[in-house]
Length: 322
Image (tube, rainbow, N blue to C red; front, side, top):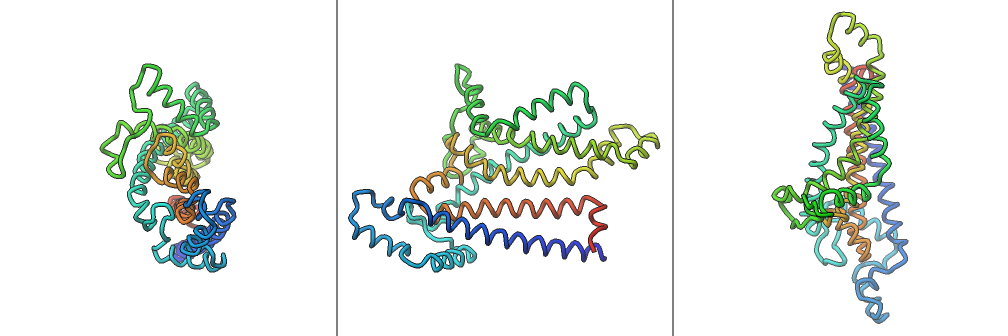
């Protein structure tokens, strides 16, 4: 019972810390967008707009109010589920990004469903065959992939599978605002780019964690009892070594949420990344602020879930909670 009380206190502390982190992020994001050199009203009306028209639109958008008042109004609206209206589209932000959220979520889930099992299997096999040819070749390959940015990986994917006479897959997507799963052939390259960016980090941490576990005393005792190596690995080593991997998986999920911006832009995929890039270019501050805070929320939530999951699957961590 005391362990469950300790876990509850741990979760409350982590949630409070996450909320404080998001508050600080919201202040930074709002201040950074306010400090951008161009004026939203001028960007919307064009350079030939008269000062009177710019002033009128600035007042209409509420940009003439003190910055603290603007921040308080924006934060209150965001917390209440009304983050405002897009300057460019002139529609509520939630309506503007609604379908895009589903598109980005589908791409993120697709990349995660592939990358996490593949990473864990590669890391487990590397640990089991430490310093053998598979470990050396795969480690070198993972290190090389980890050093390549996503946009370079995406370009390589396009060159390899969509150009130079091969043309096995579409170079860019032509998907509407809903049901991307009906165009799986167009999803392969964007998802593969994200997978290749995530697998190296998860697999390397899994390998390191499992090697440490496989060298522990209780694993040696399991071997002395006559258990075969596969049973030792999957029944004893992986459950105790999955904790550090959960942390990296969470970080990579958050990283994918940010990296999807680049991939979506590269493959013309209609998701949050494309919306954020368009909003930055058109100086659509409410959209930039909300999407940036949304991505930060994904980081915080995934790390919170990873911390809780790590404690739940690691017996020695549960016993330390009081």
